[in-house]
Amino acid sequence: MIRFAPASLAKPLLGRAALTLAVALVTACGGGGSAEAAGASPVTASTPSTPATTTCTNPTTVMPNQSGGALPFCASLSADPDGDGRGTEDGKACQMRTGFDITAAMGSGWNLGNTLDATGQTADTLADETNWGNPRTTQAIVDAVKKAGFSSLRLPVSWDDHVSGSGWAIHKPWLDRVEEITRYALTSGMTVIVNIHHNGGWEAPTLANEVRAAVVLGKLWPQIAQRFEKYDHRVVFETMNEPRVSVAGVDDWWGKPEYYAVLNRLNVVALNAIRATGGNNLRRLVMLPGYAATATAEQTNALVLPKDKHIAVSVHAYSPYDFALNQKGGSAFSGQAELDEMFARLNTKFIQNGTPVVMGEWASTDKNNLAERVKHAAYFARGARKAGIPAFWWDNGNMTWSATSTDIMGVIDRRTLAVARPEIVDAIMCAGR
Image 1 (cartoon, rainbow, N blue to C red):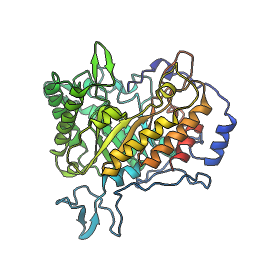
Image 2: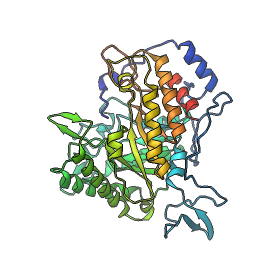
Image 3: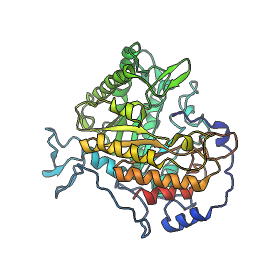
Image 4: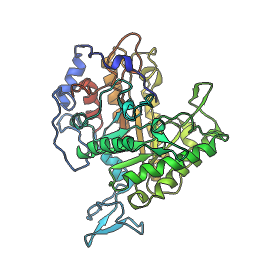
């Protein structure tokens, strides 16, 4: 989703006394509560980094189809040329990671929102990164995110300001910068999701626009995929972000059968373009969204997945909407049954049938209701974990509450490297175990 909040991002954080409930949770979990500047040293493991504690006692759900056995995992995605799931490296047998192995290692995820997805600065190739008010991303920022307990980073990227000519040639400095931030996350031991995020409408899944959308996807993805071909399973691709139709400037978030069918074909175009680059990209995990990436039944039921062993379903859920996203909606968390139904349905339809699901975006906006947001975060993260779905909090850097602000979803202060909302982060880490 578009998260505009540039005017408020540069303002200092509002002071807010911690509520008794939240303080108790922070004391119990101790994960995201640190306000110290991160100094994490580079690591190579890609395992969930939920802080160890004796009080976070939610059961761990083992996702179906996770690999087992005595063989070590193959380091390369290219170690299994015949695709039977077993490979050879240095003369020794190894097993390939399944999509479930990769999503299980994602743990709790975090979005570097309103950063490389920002737009509007076409004169300067790299100025978009800070155009919506966030600071330039550094290794220290990513280390702080990892130190807070997040195991994975979703890197939303908009490309339209950074291409030239009919071939949609991506400007090298921009692609270099995307790779640089990806390497920050890999150095910190995280899994990284790289996508095509905002666009100027060329992605609209209508019959009238299908040829154009397919052409652009077929030009952008080979360039992106080739740049990242050398990286291992910790780099994941997402074909599109919330693909939808806009009519007279108004987004159609529900869609209709025509749009659903076109999107299914566009997902195949993007996937084929990625696979055609060969090497590690033949078996790289690729996330495919349904219409608008919504997690509701009609849109997910319309999603037709191609026959490919290395794909996952991409969904977003700012749910319940009235609490989580509607700034003028209720400030008390309710709607637990809605979340229960959503997670159960996604698990039954996709996961139990062998396809992983990734919740690429979720969050709640600040309405000066910290205790209720903590309850929501804990309930959502617990539901996602029990369903076997890694979930990525949308952090747009906006942490300043006011009566007129919207989309106040920041939990990490990128300027001070502190956890700005430790109560919410700890709720995610405890519930996500």
